[in-house]
Image 1 (cartoon, helix red, strand yellow):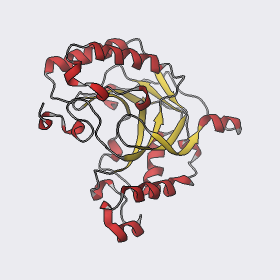
Image 2 (image 1 turned 120 degrees about the horizontal axis):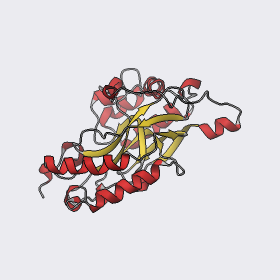
Image 3 (image 1 turned 30 degrees about the vertical axis):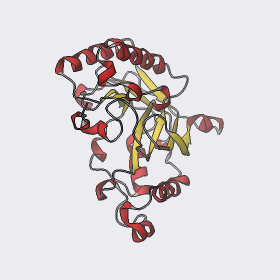
Length: 265
């Protein structure tokens, strides 16, 4: 299969056969907790996708992501292959690195910069975990990936406030900062899909989602680095709700009866 036939969002991360490419970077994420009831749902979806008769060409090999990859991205920091000014620290930030090697200097320098910027960050009380999000029953449009859509619920830590704090600390503000959608990516698409194949994926995933937990809790938020999409390694833990509970801090609880309009996604 020609690489140019791959969706643009996948081509930097995977080969057409599903083998991972090196795609270094670091982001602030929430790993899906080991004891989350949503894990069983995702595992069921994983198996159902693997059973589709076109799986071996649509999301082969490592493109169907393993458990070590299951996470929710909160804030994208620096990616080695993407150094445009619009996605890097802005004016007044990291001036020493910019002076020495501009925006395209060694990736390791940028990882150290972000670790330094976030290592001593004391998050506001309102933006600390736990974060509770509704698990939407309809998946996002299938373009380069298959994902679960998540919608923040009132009464838990504010992810929007957290993103503002992270932007202020790092100097990074992506063009989609205000429209970012929270999600869990399950697979990357390695070739262009037919409309029928997209409908089949949508049907299989949403049939399982009908019986999924209503919401998902994330209790820890961390700066993580990655070499590819297979695993995300903790560099700095920004906040852990379990530690906060041990220190006597708590939160008021989540409004699980809150209704979210479809257009909010």
